[in-house]
Amino acid sequence: MTLIDGKAVSEQVKQEIAAEVAEIVARGGKRPHLAAILVGHDGGSETYVAAKVKACEVCGFKSTLIRYESDVTEEELLAKVQELNADPDVDGFIVQLPLPAHISEQKVIETIDYCKDVDGFHPINVGRLSIGLPCYISATPNGIMELLRRYQIDTKGKKCVILGRSNIVGKPMAMLMMQKACPGDATVTVCHSRSKDLVKECREADILIAAMGQPNFVTADMVKEGAVVIDVGTTRVPDATRKSGFKLTGDVKFDEVAPKCAYITPVPGGVGPMTIVSLMKNTLLAGKKAIY
Ligand code: GUN
Image 1 (spheres, helix red, strand yellow):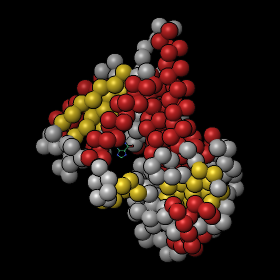
Image 2 (cartoon, protein in one colour):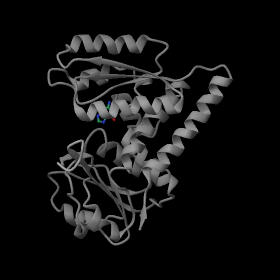
Image 3 (cartoon, protein in one colour):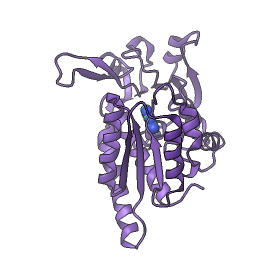
């Protein structure tokens, strides 16, 4: 069994980005600038946004954090999005999700200029991804593709089962794994809460990607011997023995599943760090005005 070290790969990719940024700046080019909007004080969102700002520093990007209290109006937030769209110094930006219930996430996403949509959530980027055109790709699935690429994991003709059909992970993951490319060329099945024989589907998977946000859902009996298992889960499960009061828990019961796998990602230290690095790669693309 090979443990996929997302932390190590992410550090390496950040160094590669930093080297490219240094070159751009040395040639007199503009330092890429990522802005992030954070609404409210959700613990997870605070942590993720802080990690994104920190990663910008490591990559040599400029970053700006814009904060609102959770009672910000939709109108006010949309006005800020439009302001960032028009700001030539901002190459790309994100609005951290989830947003409070009184704000339409879809409206916010669709207001973002797709050329600055480094999250890859705008329908134009999603549509382009689905037909293989240049676009910003959602960070988590793109990070998983980078791990498959760097570990030279063969995906061609393999049966890939994805658990979860979210717009952020499951759907774009399916698009990427079925694309005519390497990695890609897989035969993809997407399972979800209404799937009939989910266990049977999982057992047949050469590559199993668990992204439904249910801690320890995937057990050893659901995994084929020699499978590649990618765990996207990051649920905060209460744990009184920790200072933080919680333990980040994946969708895969790691201890019993790992011995059966050819490759597996741990939680934490697997997919998570790659998600942030993918956002950095998109920001570099934005700085280069590569998506238009
Ligand atoms: N919330 C959870 N994941 C993400 C992400 O990738 N981008 C944004 N903007 N919000 C998120």
